[in-house]
Length: 203
Image (cartoon, rainbow, N blue to C red; front, side, top):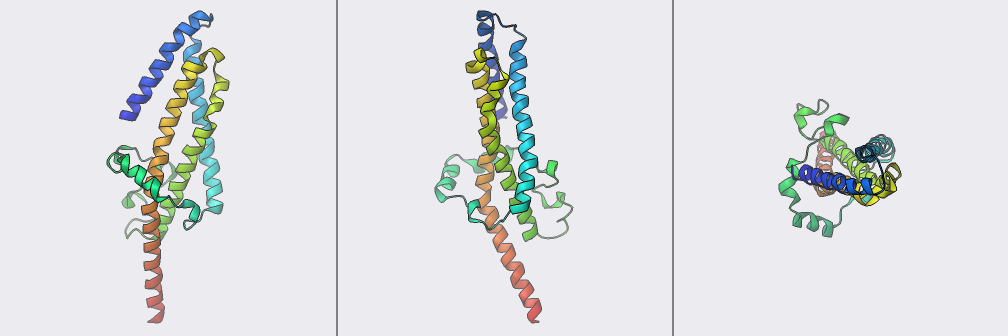
């Protein structure tokens, strides 16, 4: 809720500050909302494009035991200072859009049993996808300035950039906060399954 209020406030300030500029440079006032929403739509399309791109790439090369997935301890400490543990539960889970939810019973492929290594492998896969999706959306967001009048760079451009960064940075932080625990659970369940399989073979 706080994130939504901040974004709405930033949007309101950006649009409000654009009206004096429109009058000063003889720009039709209807151009303000057009430019604002054009920039937002661009960022939304970029996000959708990265969604398909990274799901394809990570499916080919994803390795849950790769050292590239490790989150440094100093970064984990930072997330603890930000109290991510307290507010992360309020962030909506959009996993259902790609056929995966954190709740085991909501996943037909895993329901009826324990959370095995297959479950955590998929969880990590979605975790990395989400981080890449939102992270690269932030990196690509400066192109939004191509969709607005140069006179609105400081008002609309800045406000949209702030909104895009907030909306995408929060999920990035959340994914990286969760990853160490997911990696640990994946390795533990995988090791347990291997030990069980070995015991069965020996018997």
